[in-house]
Length: 98
Image (cartoon, rainbow, N blue to C red; front, side):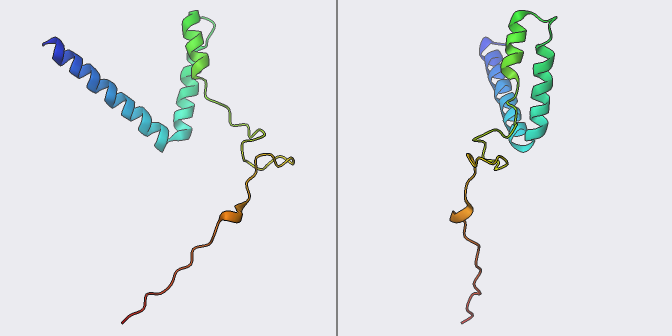
């Protein structure tokens, strides 16, 4: 094998892996967050080297606690709520038969 073919195989492999990760994150967000949290927890163990613990801390997914500004509308302050005044219902009209 030539170095060109090896480089080509590596680049194609990386593109396929990146596409798979993107598809999993878009189509299965809860599952991908669980997988990401499991990977981060396994890397963040005290028995791991400092570099792996740092990577594990960076991989930890953001918590969805519904804090102020998240737009959930559960707090009484109303800081992140949006009004549905811009929404309009769909109205279907029958097509005239001529």
